[in-house]
Image 1 (cartoon, chains in turn yellow, purple):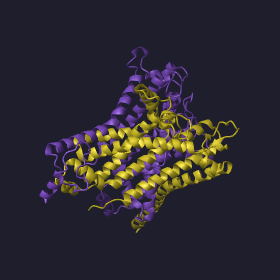
Image 2 (cartoon, rainbow over the protein chains, first blue to last red):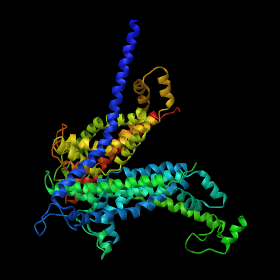
Image 3 (tube, rainbow over the protein chains, first blue to last red):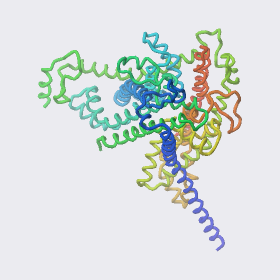
Length: 314
Length: 325
């Protein structure tokens, strides 16, 4: 009798503990949702405070960004367009570098590489993503910019080109690893069928495997763009802090001169502003909101592309 | 059938540019270019792809070599290596030859400690819930998608969150160890969760079933069977995430961490710099000795720390890699 009650007590307690433990684990999972809610709430609240001081229209259409220094007419300027120009410029140029290179690497890994080459090449590519972005910024500022000058390009000390190059290099692994997953997921039957029809490896890769994996490839492109837009330290260090509208007249000047991205502007305001309360302080949150909207939409977009465009193979 | 395709492509003839003579026709048609050309084209294509794949890697390795040359003064030995005992034990200084990395090294390690205590339990907890308890429904799917999206939020936005929550919300002082650790912790949490989930998923279901079959409760199974089996994988993932976290700069700037502190932080409430922050500070100094010597030394120490963490993770993985299944 006593023994069986003891066992009953123990299993009762065991069950209670099990329930509590499950509750704790659940709380941990809920926390991840709270982080997202927290990000959105914080950005919206403080951006609202900002827009109470600076009209939304001025922010979205202004062509001057001078958050902490008074301009000639005794005002601070909070126009996001020059920052947006900088972000778009660097994202586009880095994409031009990273997307073809990443796709080529993915295609090589999935269609051509021997097992030995793969085992070296794949981790080597991952290293590119593992190097801290501040180090990339240092590379760009101290080695790449002087190299560009040595080659004969009239680059300034801080320039968008060197920043774009390093951002491009650091997002290569993002393109290559996701694209490679998509390419490897293409069933071998398709390749065999193409070979059977007399295709060479080149034909098979370019005309069969890539089209079959196109959704995953596009998805990797979009994710890489999102990563480039959110990249902060490399562009802060290498591209400098001169907010500048894209100049259509002298296209080449855009890349050779200093430029400021949304992310770099946030960092620079954070540096200049010790305490809170000023419009400049809240402008960081408005910029953060813009950045979050861009990257979030791209991340969701990548997911939709992957799901919608995917051809199902059995 | 094959006769048909050959005759169709035959009148195209070779052209110097454009590898696509039979566009519009049967895409698998044999071109009349001859087997040698086709084999060469395959080879050339493979080599072009490989060169593209290697270009980024080669560039980074060359840059790393430059950093090493500068950090150890290999080209100008009369300066002596910038990475030396004095560099590791001195405080920051305006004089390049006396500048040291001690405060940021300690700062980075303290931030790591805060992160381990904050992120590891929560990350593993969330992973356990999602893998072992969560019902397979839409809400769970949404939580999962949310975690994937969190991993894609730019790090500077996490800095804003840390600033708003820990500094303005909780009222902690800006730029202290605790705030830095928690903020970077938020950033790596999704990575820890995802890798822990993978580790839990790798534990064969038969283990759980055997344990439950012997009368163990859900929690007993988890505690005695699943978690111990998954632990090496979880640790590997966590250490890799920490390795990434140690290079993060932007969130620390946003929460007001100093780019350079002149005393070694000892408590969680001391002002903190970190290795990447100090590099950020030094690269802006006017003297070339900073740019080409001291910063390079800082980069070498930062990368060495990361390599150490990653090597630990890889050793751990190899040591405990599952041999069964």
